[in-house]
Image 1: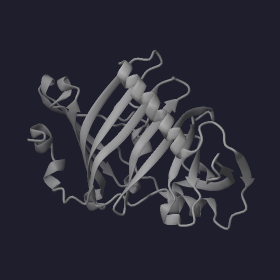
Image 2: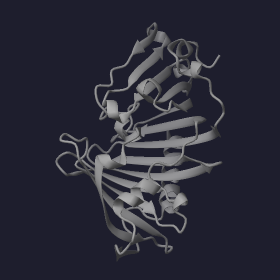
Image 3: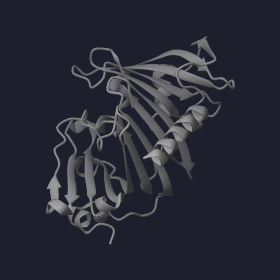
Image 4: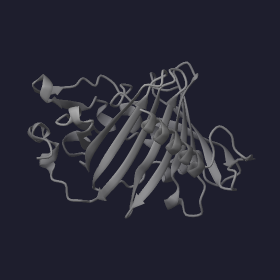
Length: 279
C-alpha cells in the first residue's frame, strides 16, 4: 500500500509538472485569437488514435479513507468505423492482481447518432463465466473509476457550444487555450466543462491537458489532468489523474507498451474470445 501510495503521489507530481499547472497559473491573457472555441476543440480534441491499439492499462483507485486498489489490464481497441452502427470495440484482460487473472471485459460502443448504451460483457470465472453488464447511460462509472463511459466515449463537437474564455500562461511561459463547453441536450451529464488545450504553433500538436467538470447543479465536480504520448502518428494517453472534489475519490491511469495499427483481428472482440482470454 505504501509503495503504491508513493508511486501515486510521485506520478501525480510529475503530471502537474508536465502539464504546467495544478490549481493556478502564472498569468492570464484575454482571448484575442482568430480561432473560435469550436475551431480549437475541433483541432485539439479528437486526435488520431490509430486503426487499432494494443497496450497495458494500469488503473489505481483511492477512496477518501486512503484505501488503494490497483488493477493492470492488457487492453485491445479497434475502430469499427461505424459498421453495424458500432463506433469502436474494446476488450480488457486482467493481469494483476493475481486473483483477478482470467477476468475480462468487452465493450462495443455505438455511434453517437444511435443514442444507445454500449453492449458490455464481463467474464468472471469464479462466478461461472460470461455475463452481460448493464450500461443504462453514459454516466455510469468506468471500472469503478472517476471517469464515466461518457467521458471516454466519442462525443460530436457539435453536441456542445464552445466558447474561448481566455489564454492562460504557465510558469515556464507556455500557453493554454481555455474553452468553455456547454451541452445542447436537455438532460446532460454535466452542466458544463472547462478544458485547457496547449497553444502551439502547429495545431496538429495541440492536446487537451486539463478538464474541470461541473455537475448538473453547476457545482464543481471533478478535475482531470492528462499527459499524452505520441506513437507514430497516433496520440495515446500516457498518464491521467482524476480527482472528484465532492467524494474525495481519486483515479490514476497509466498506459504503456503501446502498439498502434497492430492488425488486431475482429475475433478478439467476440464473447468466445473473452472467455478464452489471452491463451
